[in-house]
Image 1 (cartoon, rainbow, N blue to C red):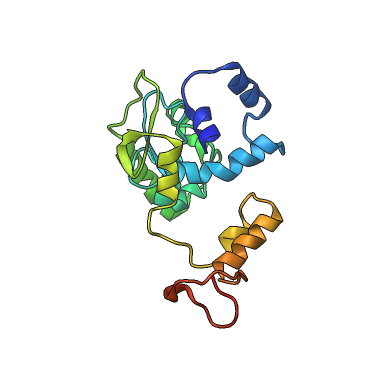
Image 2: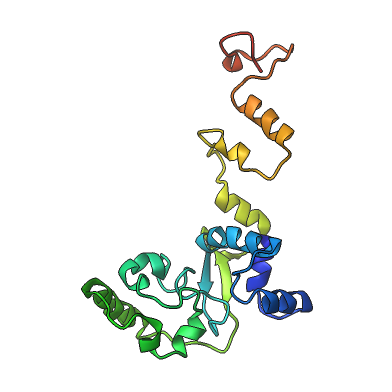
Length: 202
């Protein structure tokens, strides 16, 4: 997640220039590209953007104009979009006719008019795009803040599938699975609230 955020920060250090030149649309199959593609939707879901020049903000997938991303707010129009990875700057500098399929459905055309109404007062600025955590708009993005957004305190998973999706050795996953189901065979007495039926207990 932190690496994804660094790609959205202003500036073009050598490593970022190299990555973007080799992965202009994240369509390849390198490890970094797969990692970015896997984490990007979650990163976009927990952040909001205050648009400046619009160069590092996804027009359709970031939260910047409405409380929701535009792909979800205007699903019919998005289904006619020819460039789903377009940035806000790219949208503003393009001819609207070239961005969508020639014949829009009635629902898509209605959503197009609503979108243009939302964009009527919007203007690009000379500053860089500023990204914040959606749960705390005044807080800059940090790894700890992203973790809190993805794992709210007091909310526990209801099944064990999350264990098997972790990037951990299989023996560690198996230990976690046993712990989750209370199947660790130990000799230590457990508190009454943790005693499970059978001979296995925590």
